[in-house]
Image 1 (spheres, rainbow, N blue to C red):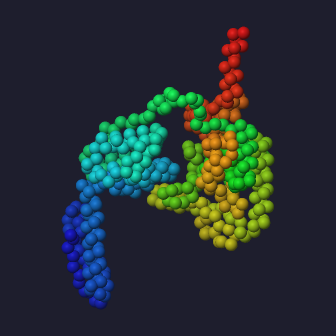
Image 2 (cartoon, rainbow, N blue to C red):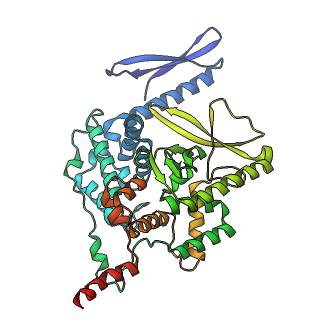
Image 3 (cartoon, rainbow, N blue to C red):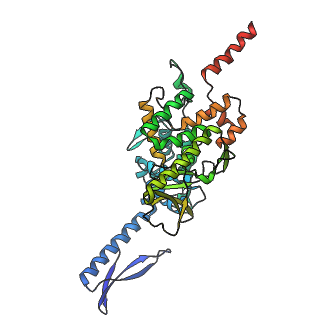
Length: 429
């Protein structure tokens, strides 16, 4: 326990106690108290207890993995060069990692075996403590957990010097052999089934009756292949109705760590141009016309969309806000003319669109298992099956590699596959 005392100077009492500086020497710190000696003595006890608690935690032998994760996030991750989206993903994984019992282990006691067991759990599935990995995560998420632990233990060795040993250097990344799960199934089904024109008509009809705010985002994605966040982030300035193309500049998502709706970059942080045809042109013209009529009808109660630039440490965030005509916008709010709006003018948030898609998958026959990303698959499949250049499709989707376009999204329909198979019959006579 730190040593301290109180003394009176003038009308007030002061309290002081000794603390260690960076070199380990004891130096005296003095703070002003109150005019009451007993109250000042109470402040002294609280200050010394707080100092002793911090001193205990700061000792390397008492640092747990959970504490280390938090320290690394504050001192390196949040001020580092990773994009906001990647940093958000890392922070989410750190939050989940702290549900596992390994987070309560002292850093000095963690071995390569402990870390190997944790990463195997992430890869193959299972539950330990409050951490539930279900049936296991894909390789990309396993790599993220691995990257975090590598960064954290490197940080613990230097500059923090909490330990001299980095157990992550002996950990091996394992992954599931997906083919084993397909040996004895009666019929192989693709994870995502592209929509036929009839299915799309059924989808739009149901949404118009039950979730009208989701109709326009669904139509845009069906005709352009945009991701959900990219659709929600479109402004009317991004759309050229005369030359029939749109510019994908940004994506909207909810930051679960900061609890804010944010406007950020696209997945690859690149701006791309996507052309569209007459069908979407007519849909967008009608949507713009209806928005103007509704805005006039609502008057001051119609919501305007804004973003605010917020800087935290070395990061910049663009937070979304909505204010109606009766509310004065702060000077640092920047107005944006969002395309996909609720009837009252507010942005249609991604979560509500995802929820609408869940209802579709439960209520509409032939659309069981439908989710928003199926529209992107459908767009790709429709283009490739009708002779579009794979390179053009890759650029429209914003894929980094052609393999992603061809292997993940290009689902040939049953009829085209049957026609291909019958080619051999023709050759044989």
